[in-house]
Length: 406
View 1: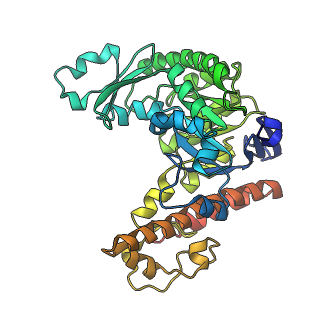
View 2: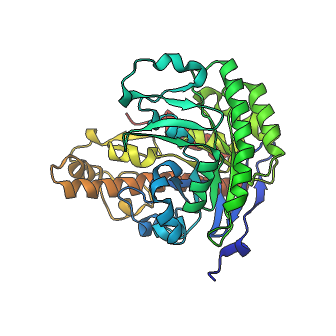
């Protein structure tokens, strides 16, 4: 039988706290290895990062990969037969899958809009190709734009899919509301998410050891922008049998710190917390300060492909650097910068009509942006351990935002 790390157990230890804050540096121990936190989880939606190899991810010290339960669901059996996500993908390190709830209620709807059964009158006479996702007590019925068929995923189905995919960490099924939804609808949706959380736990228990190693489950906290909803659901989730927590929802940037504070003040300190879908430097710094341990987002690679390059003085647009011999970011330790690629070089590849040149650009720029965000979390961790987080935060934000290159 294959040997797994950490005695095939999942647990979290706090190494050092930020004085007077909710933030901390720690280590998440999983069967496929350790994650030193704070940490950025590189997004490999379908078990791979576009244009970046697993060897290149290791070279830039990526610690963990996040994949998507919705997009991998049709390959779940194949993945299970090949030993689970880490082995099937060739990543062979810690991994996380989300529940697919976000996708079935946005991408799966065809319109990016969700209705409950109470709102069904809103979709009368819509084109079949533009059907909305329907939230019911059982789960979500949605129109799959990839198959042009109706489909359904509920808490039980999500857990079954994720346990076959076999990441070290899974997310419970939840209903994501939008910024446009009312307080009353958030109350309704949150109560449903809490019921789904209990069902997710029960189904997860049946399958979490099926692949020969233990798979853990995070509960996902919703509640919109309302303090009473955020605190009440955090208190309820704290009493459930979760191994950690996903901090979710549609956030207004200015309220992010408050929302995380409300949640993390109520959650147990000895379990890790993952902030879903955010990676801007200020979000990561605020998130860490308010108690988040890990982060994920597609932005670093997506923005790279569109010519936006991260630097310590702010993001730059490659379009403005024709024939420039400047490095992408002076002092950067990523393989792209270390190999001497300049802004002008990358712009030339990006604008080239040759598909191989473009692919090379996508790889070089993605590696740079990913390493920038990964290095940021490494530096934040070091500042916590050294006791100078506040100084680091102030200096970084001053350089990145106030000296921003246009």
